Amino acid sequence: MAGTTQAWTLTGHGGPEMLQRREVPIPEPGPGEVLVRVTAAALNNTDVWTRTGAYGLPGAPDARAGWRGPIAFPRIQGGDAAGVVEQVGSGVDSGLAGRRVLVDPALYDGDGTDATPVGLLGSEADGTFSGHVLVDARRVQDVGGAPLTDGELAALPVAYGTAMGMLERAAIGPGETVLVTGASGGVGLALVQLAAARGAHVVTVTSAAKAGAVRDAGAEHVVDRGDGPRAVTTAVAAAAPYGIDAVADVAGGDLLPALLPSIRDGGRWVIAGAVAGPVVALDLRRLYLHNVSLIGSSMHTPAHFDRLLADARSGAVRPRIAARYPLAELDAAQAEFLRGEHVGKIVLEP
Image 1 (cartoon, rainbow, N blue to C red):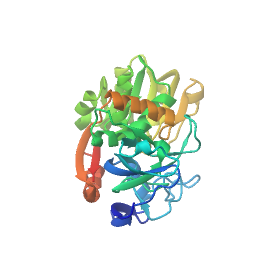
Image 2 (tube, one colour):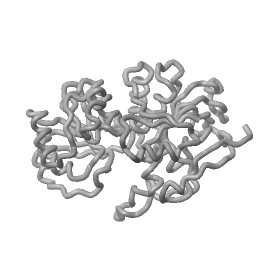
Image 3 (cartoon, rainbow, N blue to C red):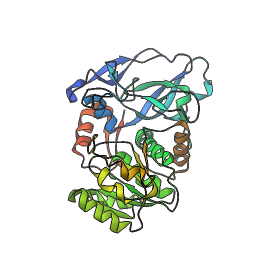
Image 4 (cartoon, rainbow, N blue to C red):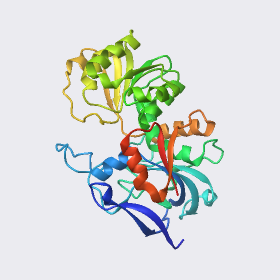
């Protein structure tokens, strides 16, 4: 397929000016690949952190780097996408052409269902802020019968995939009490919805202004983060007097050492973000004396994504859409995203 398409390319680490809207050639799918026409994409913190180079490097936490290290520029940004398969490469079932699909944005270290993500569309490979995206045929899933809109589908992969990975790695099950930090963000709200859907009792930490939306998503208790770690710890103890079975944390920072004593013996703390601070002082005795597991979780495995797909196809979970923008207005969409006043996902519709 010849021709060009509009895309937002990252030309280097830095501010919004490093993102440029360009006309780029439509790529041709190679063996095992498919070309997807993007019908909806969505914004994530990973887009901003990749642009600013906020991920650091081993031994150099302040170094500018992408999700998994240095990035080859220019790079088309974006990890989330729903769309339609326009063209298939050799070795791919021709029946995929014309199918409505959801794209798994992870690049894995193997072919198994428990493979580990080692890359991400928009960081280690060109992504979805474009009219078209080229992906491995194994990473598109038919969602033709799903009751969700394309925008709702596009809101799922990064945020809800990350949340599903956290819940699965921490083995959070029905009847357990789980604390969710940063509960009004993309991953946080997904955690609330998915944890509540599996029968967990959800306690959350968020701002007072967003408490209503978090309750609507399934939280039983909402704690105001604005009063500081000590007050948050006291409020969490009142909301969960028998203790916390697990913490699903996307914030990090001072809340981690402050809340660690609130976890029951044998509990789990799973973390997939550090918006409140990536470097903390931790009393390791609170871990090993109480057999608490500290679990790092980065995105999802293929098996986790399959479970998320089942929820999408059944309509068991429906992302909250905060705003919609044309793809051409990514700069305005990202400006709203960075203000942090929204609850839910911001969607781009080419």
